[in-house]
Length: 148
Image (tube, rainbow, N blue to C red):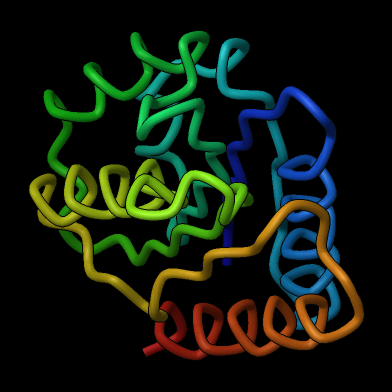
């Protein structure tokens, strides 16, 4: 199984999340490519069976600026037959805007025809021990869903 993990980060938190998910998928036997969002063309996702996006939410619900082209280009893809998951870091300080990018990427991927393989994961700031367990479970659920 080929997986592609794409992350956007300012503080390093989402790169940490992407690394945890990548390691979890590799441990399950997936061949994983991990890339930063501004260095990734949306079309590259066509080569993956499993797609994971790890975005941050900026300020009051804004998507990562460096990922806007990628986000918009996702809308042009037909990812039917692919499985996806979205996990991202945010700051609960922003209350109702907390981790909205996770939801927006999830909606965009659903619109491409891809199948959501696990519930969205929202992490406050940097992943702690409990979050690592949650991300391992997320990776496992995604791998199982994509294996069907």
